[in-house]
Length: 491
Ligand SMILES: NC(=O)c1ccc[n+]([C@@H]2O[C@H](COP(=O)([O-])OP(=O)(O)OC[C@H]3O[C@@H](n4cnc5c(N)ncnc54)[C@H](O)[C@@H]3O)[C@@H](O)[C@H]2O)c1
Image 1 (cartoon, helix red, strand yellow):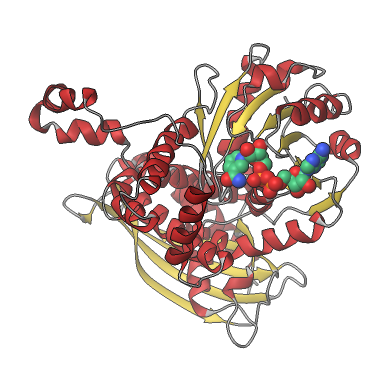
Image 2 (cartoon, helix red, strand yellow; image 1 turned 180 degrees about the horizontal axis):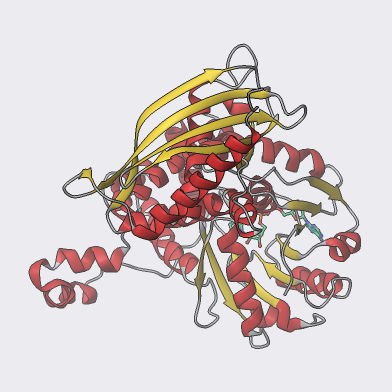
């Protein structure tokens, strides 16, 4: 299967727009195809709308944003894409027809995935050419913020397709959940549907309003569900003996009439109650306003969960790990190509993101620290201080930073950082970073920083790993001799 540089989107509504925003953010180009030409304006708006929340999701260094193009020619999209994600309306015959048609124009090593909420992959791939490269990849709205994607293979889907798709979705910061066998509704929608049917019953029977039912989740189980699912939570509910006790204690309830599951008839009366209830909950706020609110708390929750390395927070952490690894690529390439040779190392390539700009139109103070921090991170990763090293309880702490500003950097300006190791011993490293503009090599700022190696607990300065120390010392020695050789000699 090929490396995905361009994602083709088939159908560019709510879900197509969400896919576009996510992959563009992580540096992948998008060719969006829809039968309606007016969807071009819509998808560009959807991508712009998602940008604010995505920009706050992670401060890890990002590759340049991907480029978005739009076409109404589905065949042209199919010929150019490295991976195709279908997001057209949820109708079996329509999807079967369009997938079959598109598959005849896409080379056979191009994976084709469907966002279907509940259709079975074996039925969708029925008329396709090279059906083994087809799978269901079911995302959740908003696709650009929620990491879950359910992967379901059909009878003719190959293991290699599922593997390639998992790899791609992980690359764009998602959590691929492999569904063992196809069932209508996959896993999540089957669970959501059960809750939904009970809601409709209770509103229908005037047991509760839509708002009260939402409160019954939001103030309680919803908070737990962000990081632990029903099963693990019930295990905790059983006390010391966990799930076994829980089942003994609450087992009899399973026979009581707590749930109905079969949905009630969707009468006009029930529809009116659902609409009036949710309008009261919206309290005059537009869908756009509520989406922004939802996006903001989804970002905040993931950042909190990241500290606990759990659920969606663990996915975000893995994504950031990959982004830092990639950002450190130039330093590693330079070093493995025979460096250090005495030159400052080019450790980081980055770009001034629009949200980094101050009222003068230039990169704001705090972002200098972020960029220099990322540069240090790239260097230390090369030396062996990566996530695994930190998990062993050892890390580098910043103890001193001295920044000098020399010139301005504008929005979207490409930048790079070179780094010189001035001093290093068992516990300390002193660095000099220089931030340059790519357009004219102009020096934008320098930062001299001192780092201390710390073991926690007890949170005290400690000697760094011998291999790490040796790598840093080798760079420092080579740079010192290079600098001496380059220094002007006295007449
Ligand atoms: N909305 C959700 O919350 C959600 C969540 C997960 C999955 N899904 C699934 O994603 C798919 C799309 O849902 P949506 O909510 O984005 O729908 P949508 O109605 O917002 O978008 C569908 C788009 O497909 C286009 N389209 C229709 N026929 C086409 C064709 N023949 N070729 C190309 N484009 C065509 C339409 O013009 C429209 O822009 C469905 O299968 C749905 O079940 C939806």
